[in-house]
Image 1 (cartoon, helix red, strand yellow):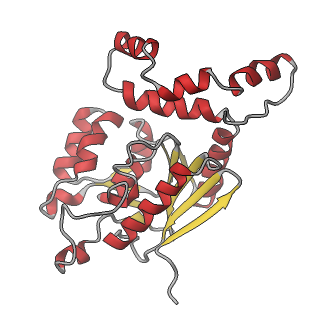
Image 2 (spheres, helix red, strand yellow):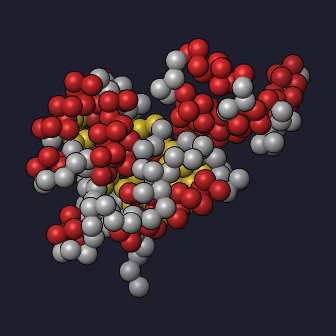
Image 3 (tube, one colour):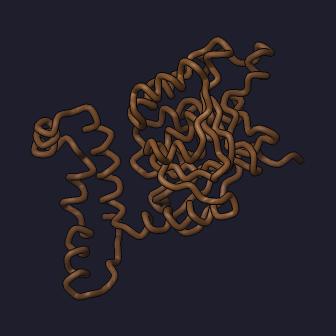
Length: 262
């Protein structure tokens, strides 16, 4: 029996998801749907707080859309990629839990889009990011939507229109990624960051993600209006929670808080 295209590992409240399609971890329709199920389960499991997504091997995070499948006629450009859209994450808009992209090599096309669909990116020092879609006659839609939100518009447009490669070092300089580390330290660094997040108040993490998503294009004035009118459901839940009492109490008693997520 062949090994699964998606490997899943859980430790406490952290989920590690690995795209496992050597040699390039290209994502075909079946793999995309499998990833969608994994990320939807992550979204819906109250015990899980943080996910890490990475690729197998040491050369490719993911080469993106499986062009061989596309060329064979077995998949359409606007076909059904399953829940969450391409790679299970690009269109999972109601995910209020953080995802860390641990980029272990080339993040190409849809693989770059998968990394961008997370919330934080840690990259191995040999990683590269690029969008070759301009050379194969398609649009990198998720990157076109997202990349200008991460890096300066001029740099994003250059990448979209030329397909040029961006090194991990340059990506760090532009603020695209959070850390650059040697490959052998990549997963340890990702897990360390995940554990730090998981130690925080879970309802606060949920509220932060929801507010960031809903307020991203709003003025500060509108953000306050939305808050006062109760449009941030996670924020309202956080305010009314037992955790909102436990946090200050634990601080006053000089002890670690015991979060219940309620």
